[in-house]
Length: 129
Image 1 (cartoon, one colour):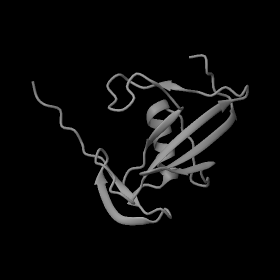
Image 2 (cartoon, helix red, strand yellow; image 1 turned 45 degrees about the horizontal axis):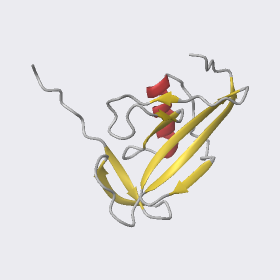
Image 3 (cartoon, one colour; image 1 turned 30 degrees about the vertical axis):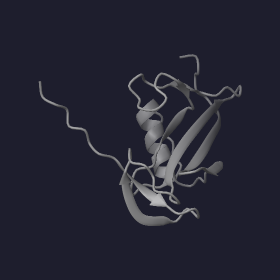
């Protein structure tokens, strides 16, 4: 049986003012102290105000088999937060949405991450399935 080749994913590193430092690390590497990686979250609310959530797979390295926001993911090296939000939303749920003219509704700096949160409200999305 042939071993599956796993592609390495890389992320850009930012300073605390959200400026790219020019440094890149592998996604699974520890972020050096004083630097940040960029993460996106997309929250979709239907017209009744219900939030679409999804359950993480059992194979996820962090928080396996737990409930999560609509979409979350690391911003790949060379991407903007907006491009990543569009890509992740399509990859995870098959929903096309253009964030190119959007700013995050919320941006939070933590110990080693900058989390950008995009909120989509009042869309005709069936949350029963």
